[in-house]
Image (cartoon, rainbow, N blue to C red; front, side, top):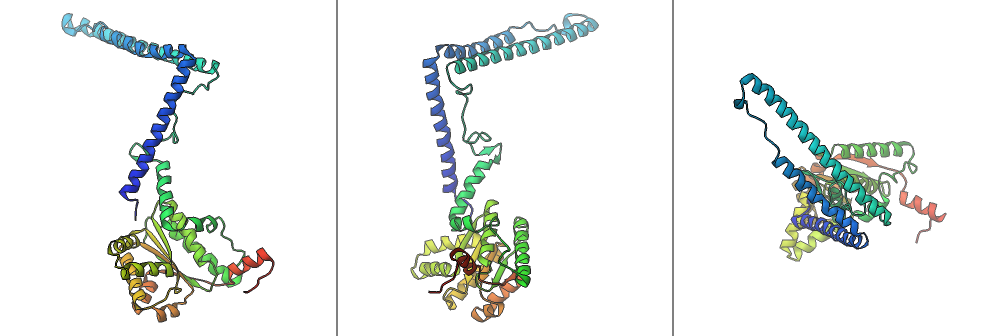
Length: 354
């Protein structure tokens, strides 16, 4: 689920519009300066003349004598001296031309500043000075283009709002003690290793344990880092995922269903949150196995979080699903108090059940 051609073309159109905007602004500024400082335009008009003068000097310079015009030894000496002199003239002319251009530029800058304009008022302006608003530096994507691509990936991931609150910057050990803390630290280390090796290795994660112990939180922390790598990520709660699949299948929306499957099978990372909260039946079980199997065959990483123990997973779903997860996923168990409840108590000073 990389950017579509339409999405990429839209980004390139935005770059083109940005360049047009800056070009029109530069023209507006130039007309303003010409109206306020007539001498400025006179200086600008001198620059093409300097270039033509230099070109004429180069074209009509006397050619060096050839060796055939004189004796061999004399010719070599004369030719060497002539070539040396020619190079000296060229260098002198080049330096002189550069000096003239520099002098005109300094005069233009001084005129602008005396009139109350910044010295660089008529310099080209760019939103991104590194790529000059093209999106590329040479053949490489500029950081600004990568940022735009990542922004689109964030929008597609269904994670944008969640990531603002749930990320490694807000991750805390304060809610864990003893064995719970050790398990949490191990899960964090596994998560960081998963991120560091994401581009090189194919790996899947299965976070399970009691309610409110940070399983979903860690999944979203990982998602942010993978998105920042520029990799497509999709996030669904299990109930939302299978409800959507059901709506396509039983609504006979074949084209939409195939497009959705392409995204599910092809995104670099799929996160299925709260597996087991959906209404499980043979249809859901078959869809889940198909999804996990296709992603495994495509070597696309998947993260599953659930409150189900491994025994409950085996009881609820098919043996094929249990085998696929236990053999191809790194399993992390998280235990401890319900952090959501603890946070609510801290905010309100007490916890009341409804």
